[in-house]
Image (cartoon, rainbow, N blue to C red):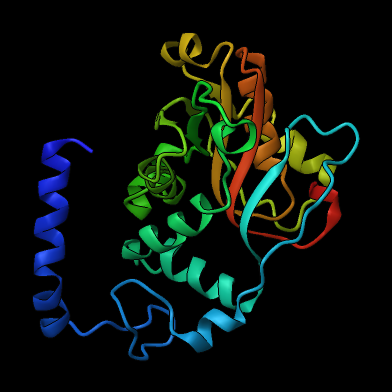
Length: 238
């Protein structure tokens, strides 16, 4: 660890008791007292569901999905507070939970390989202006801070604003997203011949992530995994 980072960590740890005294730790979901800042209480934690292993479906273009939780009432409540409630202080909790599920090449092979690129799903600029942030980018920062890869925040661009996809069929979703997402010209040399982990907050139909995967592979990425905080519990997503 660099000296500056070590000093920052020591200062942060030294101030923690004072922060806890002024702002007693509370569960970000229900407000109950917790042992530390930014953690869930035991009751809320017990309501989260965690994914089992899924086989990547035949024909999928991605190389697997990494999810911190299953999308249920509790994970949905956390995502809504984070994404629409402006509770960006949830990013370290949600991002760290996702990062803990990502195993590096070193973990799997016992040697040090080239780190993957960490790339967030993009928002259209008007959506960022309205919301003030890209929730996927905040999660991607936390994943990179946990040492799971090299962060490129602006690798992807959403070239046109798309409507909500919730009530559309799979074919209509694909049509709506056609040409909506692309790799920025300046990022193409960085993407080529690299593994990528695409970061999103929630994975439901998979239409948006599929469009991102296609763009990254077209730009020369060797493989693309999808990482999300919560995912729908059905095998079709892989």
